[in-house]
Length: 172
Image 1 (cartoon, rainbow, N blue to C red):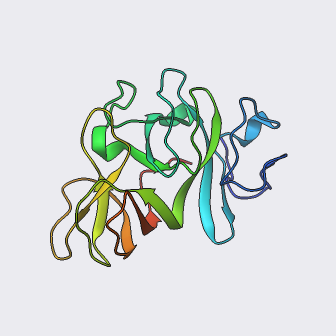
Image 2 (cartoon, rainbow, N blue to C red):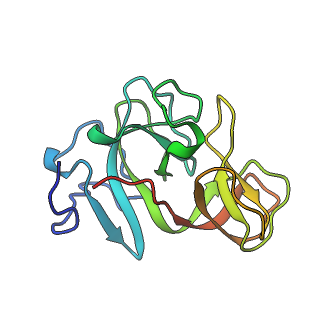
């Protein structure tokens, strides 16, 4: 397990940024689990679980095994033992099982949205269901029923929403 998770550079290789990173092997195996900041956003290098469905771009991913830094694509996947409270981060790319991604854990982001209404500063939580990787909102002044994924930054009626992510369900 890494001792100092922010002390060295992460190799992005031929990918332009963490938002497009999606290899099937790592250049530096010791980078798995490392956290870093890129353009004001915080990321963590993780692997999509070998039994996971394909991750949806801008969807939330859930911890499969924190000790191995593996994530799974859906709230209902059997590898997600924490359910809706097991949110690990946002995947910027569509990624197949066993791929490596740099999931976003903090900062401005676009996330998949499955709600019908929302307001600025509403709280986002993971949407329950067996095949979902999207979020729904909880209105201001209402206690969240699940782990908070982020805060709505701009209202939307589409399937994606602008939010500020601040995930606390992390491992070092």
